[in-house]
Image (cartoon, rainbow over all chains, first blue to last red; front, top):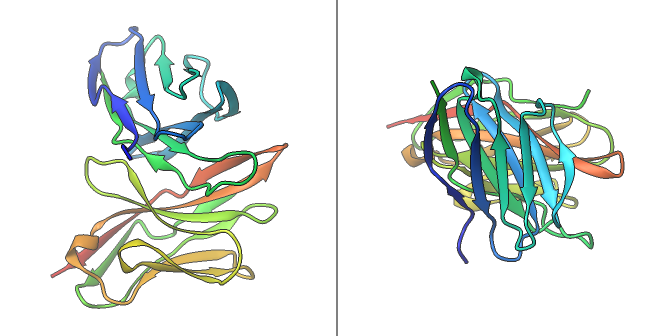
Length: 116
Length: 115
């Protein structure tokens, strides 16, 4: 089975621009979560989507948004980029079905975003 | 507030020696507990989990973890460390809240295994 894929792997943007990151989960996984990883803050939860609905949300400003498509692929958008948005953005998928599931998350390699 | 603590930023151990990476948590209810490992320039990889049952769980690459409910701990262990185990290790907790659940991660512990 193919793992979680994220595109692009690297991105350089300037302040004020916007960016869209993409994540394709493992086939059959319906839950997709996004995390921001920085050296100082560790792994911070952004949001989780399940069956095209946002099910959980972390404490990030409204500039951070996401969506999930019917094939479970997900996108994350950051508008009006700030220098502090420079980070590794990780996507994770899991089975997480309502009847049970294994609950562990499978992570993609991440998108390294640099804002200058 | 719900939290996960990894009290050591870095753990150094000699190759062949046993290793322990510590994790304690403070969440309500019965959480699910996980360990993940991150190698340089890679995403996190699932190592093992505790859902219920035996307090000692075994995972990938010879790692195991012991769940201790009274001490709210879930320490990661390995009997004999390898240089290739050097990486960043994250403890995570999944817990129910407001009709759904949340995941929180510890801040990570860098394991350095010295040859």
